[in-house]
Image (spheres, rainbow, N blue to C red):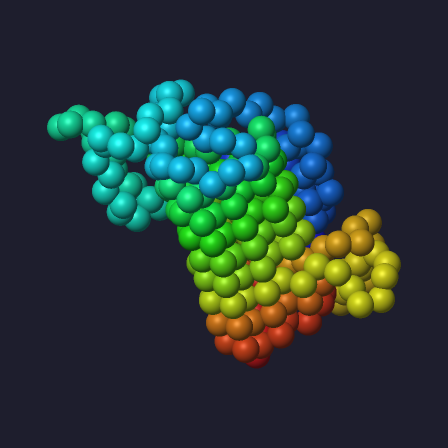
Length: 266
């Protein structure tokens, strides 16, 4: 009931070392820091991507090289659908990643996949791993230890801290995700907030029909199984576990604890 395979398809998430089928579903959050500390991060070209400063001009990363955006033609289509295109003359540069002028990358452990778009005004702190064809939109704030899969959206004025997005997860607008996991194809309505810290200090315990279960974590937001959707301005309490394909309706608050698949929180 509380194992990873009950919430996610671990074989399709791309982070197999973190997501082992029989582990408790919150264990990837406990192991996130050592996992990310052990990853390899390519060096970003300091001349074009200054550390901790807004980019003065757009930069394109392609096949291990960095190119100034000047002189390139960039079509800013939907990156998650493979419609972000960069052309050098008449030649398309397949898999090109675009970091727009005004974006800010801080730290030397940031890895961007192929076909990624980082928009102006986004702030990404190290360490961060961003998967292929993901969009990090204007005003997004990635506070470190952020692990994002393929074809995801970290949206406008969305703050992410010590969290995981599985493939195709989207937090498009005004969201907060602290110490949380979004399963594959999760979609957060605008203004969704995931609280991660109890008012009364102490470990977050998971309420289940059989009683409370220790998580071993003092900060634990929400864990949303594959296909979960939240409505606009919804809130989850610390230690909320939503089974696959559940719904949180607009303006609703999801109580802490385990909710089985296909739950509807009103």
